[in-house]
Amino acid sequence: MSLPFRAIISDLDGTLLNANHKIGNFTIDTLEKLSQKGVDIFFATGRNYPDVSHIIGKVNAKNTMLVTSNGARANDLTGKKLVNHYLPEDLAVELMNIKYDPQNICLNSYQGDEWFINKEIEELKKYHQDSGFSYQVVDFAHHHGRQTEKVFFIGKTAEALVPIEKYIQVTYGDQVQMTYSALLCLEVMAKGVCKANSLAELVKLRGYTLQDCIAFGDGMNDVEMLSRTGKGCLMKNADPRLKAILPNNEVIGHHKYEAVASYIRATFGII
Picture 1 (tube, rainbow, N blue to C red):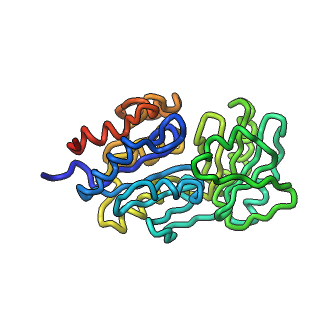
Picture 2 (tube, one colour; picture 1 turned 180 degrees about the vertical axis):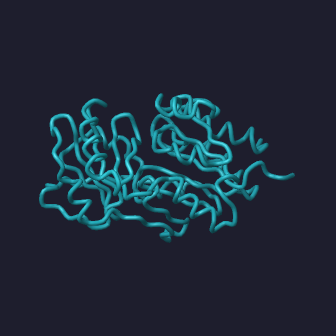
């Protein structure tokens, strides 16, 4: 029986992972059975590689690859780096030192295997409890720009991020790629960096294109991959802005019920 798609691509938080930001047993079983059918699996996330590499270890699946930092990096199962697109060092430093309201915004960067932040935010640790990956508090005025995969701003409100987004667009718009990984998280990468572009590089290595893939996502950083794949499915819990941009894409169930796994089983005939 011919397969409907050569590969599945899935975002993690709000999509493949459950309400506890973990990969459920039903999903693990589904992905392993999917792999046995010869279907490739790509995880695509805004998180950093060390933070989510453990997820691959929980899934016994061949030909699995992990795209991280919104496409700035990609690794295979062995940990081999296949894609890497850093922000230029001087540009990274400038982004880390733009003016912002520290009462309503916290500044972060992913650099190599490390996560830096300007102040303690205990709430952020719940997203990384499964991996043990955590941040280091630094003074960005005296920080370096080496191996910067992304600089990102987390706001207390969406409105707090608007001035930063506008300033970066006007000042650096021709040098960077901006997106929202969540309603309150504005992320900045090197120009041309997005999940879809890195995924296109990876599937080319496998001998096919994004049109041969089905993708699942819930955030604005998923727009390109949901637009360019053969089929792009949105989660019921997806960002309203994403649903507005892609009104013709199918909306499936909620991530807390492992809806991606259920959809995969129905699509590929997995019992």
